[in-house]
Amino acid sequence: MSHYAKPINLDEALTLLGDRKWRILAGGTDFYPAQGTRPLTDSILDINGLEELRGITETSTHVVIGARTSWSELLRHPLPASFDALKQAAREVGSVQIQNAASMAGNLCNASPAADGVPPLMVLDAEVELHSVEGGRLLRLDQFILGNRQTALQSNEMVTAIRVPKGSTQGGSAFVKLGARRYLVISIAMAAARIVRADDGRIKEAAISVGSCSAVAQRLAGLEAALVGLTPGADIEQTVAGADLSGPTPIDDVRGSATYRREAAREIVLRAVSLATRPATPATVAA
Image (cartoon, rainbow, N blue to C red; front, side, top):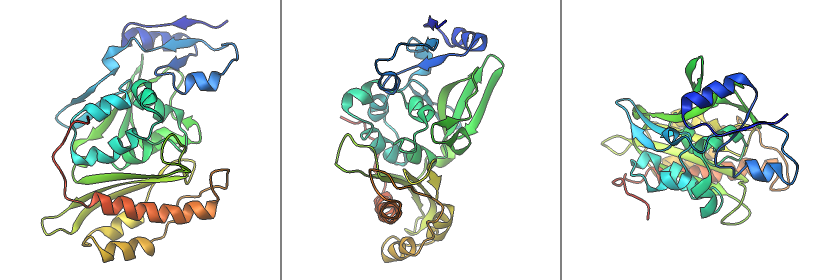
């Protein structure tokens, strides 16, 4: 027998999660299309009343994004240039109506290889905060997303926040997405880069992630290390052109071949790195 519950606070939600197996409903932008016209057979835990899981706050060590925070809320919040890639990705998450409703944690829990939010969160070294009645735990994003539609989330747990360590909020960042058209499209390949430059202009730190080219988005550790010490310009182009990008293992599908994805990934990585090396601008609030 299926059940429906709409808890009014986190403690109630966690207690319910410990009682039976639930399907969590947040923004619903993936939930309803996936359900289609089939009758509901799962028990539904509607967390849309949990205001404590919404909003962006700061601690002494982290920027904390509540699990129910929408992409539109992220766009409106003033954040440093290191979050520019995440904001650029936010504008690619479906239509404005989807951005208003969809939760950021839902994008991660859905665990699609083409989830726009994953590469820019990876270059921010984001952690996923999970809670159950037994307590909480933190997982790096690459520990949380295990494969295509697979996560480390236990049946008695829910994601409560995304945490970005303040040590990873330096530098500028950029997100580049390749699709069959400009808007409202699932990506063929995408890349995010965060670049920290020293006072002399050379690259001091690089973080690069590629998505839609493997079951889980991947950091390019070898290229990140190779970029350190370089000056933006021809040196970067040559380094990216000669980099070993064999880590991602793209597939052939209706959107593009594996060969095309691999070559496209190299080009969009170069574009993301080039954009991320621009001088940082003061934090702004999106219109």
